[in-house]
Image (cartoon, rainbow, N blue to C red; front, side, top):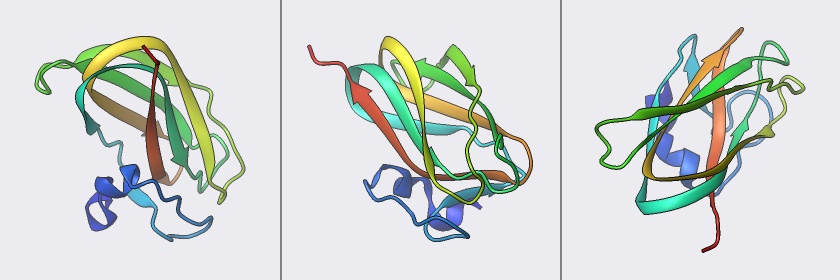
Length: 128
């Protein structure tokens, strides 16, 4: 279902409204892998994901982060877990990378319950 509202909405700077559907990018009973091209190599300290749990508070079970210099060969950076929030309310999940240099990032969430509802993804660059 991520195709209907598209992953482009994840980087448009606009947050969806709480509740059923608004402009959430949704994957029902699926764990997608989403690739992001930052345009050039950047030193990223934090990735923020605006998501909405639907069935249960811990619906976003984990997020695997992979990085790449060329967009074809990805290396696993780390897996993050422990996300929980009130169902049917949007919330930011913050992933502290410390500092990783890459142009391409692949985020692979795993769900419990309904699936994945994402509204926005931000990559925070560390100042040089």
